[in-house]
Image (cartoon, rainbow, N blue to C red; front, top):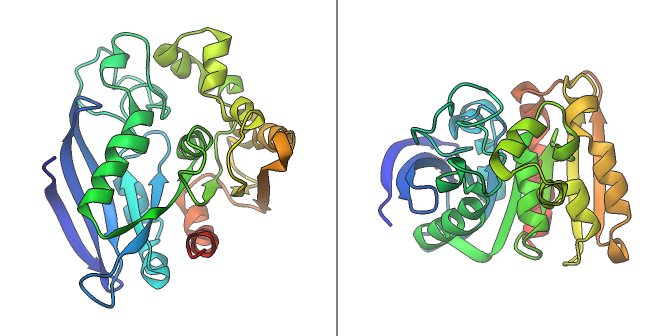
Length: 285
């Protein structure tokens, strides 16, 4: 698969790059960011950390706003930041709403027409893109972790819960944790996968975590007390309660409620070093 370099900028001794490629899974061109930390030698390989952004974002939001490159260089971790949805697919209404269509894939595999031809983001993240970066960059194949923000937190949880053992660690900033009960998000989800309750629950992490039966997994969560989506749409308490009911107590959550912080990237940039420390401790095992 051909990768086209879009940009390359030196940062903290490494390089923040953006690539473009045609995705057979999504049937469109896609971009992703990748930070390559400075190495001791040309043959050095690194763990990789995938970051999934939230609604309306592209690969650029975390690259330009989070300030993560300093810590990726310090902890010697490659960071991959994909776009959040297919783009320019000529689907009627794909650019009309902030919570449906472009920038709002929900990280699911759509089953409803006309979305199902392109909106297969779960498979793209966990299969196509992962295999592409593992083959193309100096990555230690078995050392993969994932984190995300808001809808990207929902996506990161989906990836981990539906692929037990694939990721060494998971962390989240203000994650959407019970999407089928979110009044802001449920209509978009139904548009992509239909209205059957059983199907909706298959893409809802609060229901998935109860059935998780993979390796033990510790999940780090930060969220601000002034997050405007906290009580209505994130529903983190529902997820934590469900995780506590997981078989053999295999899911352990650590939730930090940070006073005065909102939903944006000032919040993320404040606490992102804590997430790199967390992932580094798991990836070094």
